[in-house]
Image (cartoon, rainbow, N blue to C red; front, side, top):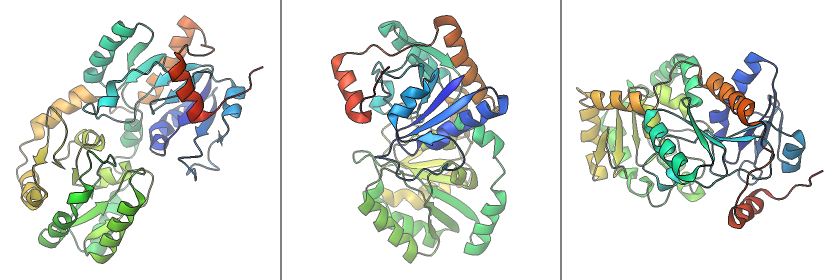
Length: 350
C-alpha cells in the first residue's frame, strides 16, 4: 500500500510515527511524509524517513491511503483520506466539525465512536472505525524507556517528584497569562521539579517569557522538544487548562490539575484561581480521589493500550480499499476547495 503521512503541524509527527513504524514492520508498503513548510521549518525525522515539502510530489506518488491528524487535507489527492485526530479534547468545538475532507474517521474509543457514528448518519459520505489513537502504540512500547532519565533529572535537581506544565496555546483557553507566580510558589513550597513544555503554536513572546522564568527559578526546567509524550511518561502529575494532553495524561492513570478547564465533565482537579495550585497539588498527590473518574476516561476515551493501533489503522485502510477501491479525489463545495488550495496550493494532473 502506498501511504502518505500528512503533517500540517509539528504535533502531527509523533502521532503518525507509530503508523509508519508498523507499516515498516509488516513490510510491503511504500511511505512518503508530507511536511508543511510554513509550519514545520525543520523536520525532526529528516534522514530517517522519506519526506517532502512539495505537494506535487505527494500527488505524483499517487497514494492509496492518506493519514491525517489535522482538520484539512487536499481534496485532489488520490487515496482514502483518513482522519486520525490530534487528541482527545472533545470539549473543543472544532473536534466535532465535519469539513467533508475525509472518507473515514478512525476513532480513539467508544465515546468518540458513538459521536462520529451519529454524524456519519447525518452526512452520509464517510465511515467510522474504532481503532484507538496511534500515539498510544509509542506509549505502549516506551512506558519505562525514560525511567533512567527521570531518575537523573530528579537526582540533579535534588527533587523527589516531577510535575509537567503543558498548557494549550489557544488565547481564549490558555492558562499561560495567569500561572507564573503560582508555578513559582509550587516549586518553592513543594519538593517538585517542574517541567515547562508548551504547544509549538504558543506565541513566541510568551514562550520566551517562560523560558526566562525557568532559567531564573530553581526547580523549573524548560523543555524544547517537538513531543510532549516522553515527559508525560516521566511526570507524576500534570498542570494544564483546556488541552488534549489532559486526557492523554489521564489515560496513564495519573492525576491532573487544570485552571478553568472548558469541559462539561471534569475528571480531574479543576481550579477557579491559580492561587489554589499548591493546595490542589497536595490534594491530588495525597489520597487522590479521582482514580475512579480516570478509569471511566480510560474505558471510554481510549482503552487500546495494546500496541496494535497502527495495525488496526493499516488494516482499516486496506479494508476500505477492498470495499470501495482507491478514491481518486474528494467531492467538495467551492468554499472547501478554495480553502484546500489556499492552504496547500495546486498540483498539475496528468
